[in-house]
Length: 477
Image (cartoon, rainbow, N blue to C red; front, side):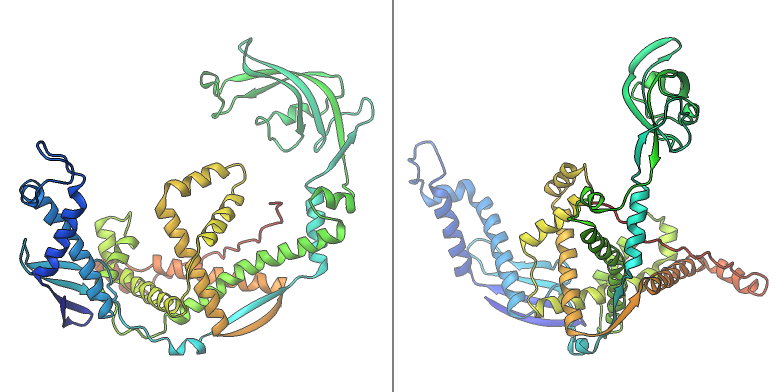
């Protein structure tokens, strides 16, 4: 095989490949040997069909398969030997080919640009360590206890009031007729939460143990019996118990019910969970900061075909007119994304970062745990969607690269309080919102831009409300 590389323009290259007919014929011989034992032709024993007969019967199909294999093998080898990393699918132009002929073809390819990583060690970023005060954990535990009240039997003849637990049996009818699902035993309702049917709770205010009460309620849109949706049902309720809430005692027993060894262990777990809540959000800020620093790195040329692909992704779901008006902005975004991707990928290759199957399975299990009750659905999704696995692999790969970048770059470690963490996150979210609003205010058409210029002194954009994202409360997973 002979290979000649010609620069066309910038990253675009023509790679001329010549494969002599002797090599082609050796591929053909291998293929004929491969198929001769499998061919059954009348008048010939298996494996004894003459080459000329095989050639007449299957020659064109065999040459087509051989040509595909030769092109695949030689194209890969030609690019690898000349250290050309293609940015997208190369195009092949066959010049000469055929049985018992030399093969000549040209690979037209856009290669990935060279990426300089010398300054990666000088990259700087902020790394936050949140110090959680013990009172934060105590307050969180109190909130958990408040949402998990204990109940004790109310005194005889005590009337049910808001926040009481009422236990009852019922039978229900619509237009005097019983229906499927219209019976219930030992049904429990905490009054005031309105979790059964809208307005049902309020009608149980004032009932006592052993009372009988008829409650009317409208059956909801999601009621299984479709012909009864939005109809008024009458529930004949027999009150079997009324219970009053009592303050939950926060002690070792309470902690054990939540899966901890004792109260001290629960406090440690809650402290770690609060810290993790802020750490995950702050780590995302750190990652964004690193990516913005990488955007400043110099890459001489971005392949046009990659820009075009990224613009198509950004334009998905838009009308042709909106897509055209947003083209320039999308191109800038695309260039930044591609640049960062090239740098991260080059860093990953130089440091031989790989993603193992075990890491993929671990990540899938994380996804499963995040959706309790839907574990099978999540597992089926990944088993039936190779593209989802590929996307997950890309995410894990990027996270491993970012993690190693943090080790090699210069971190500015900052120990901050919970309040300081909230302020940093709030300010970051405000900046993101302001940027979104700024992008939305960009004129879409030339005449819109003209009007904006003419009326600049008359109208000013209103200030946007700051949206503050609250941190999640502890949830048992």
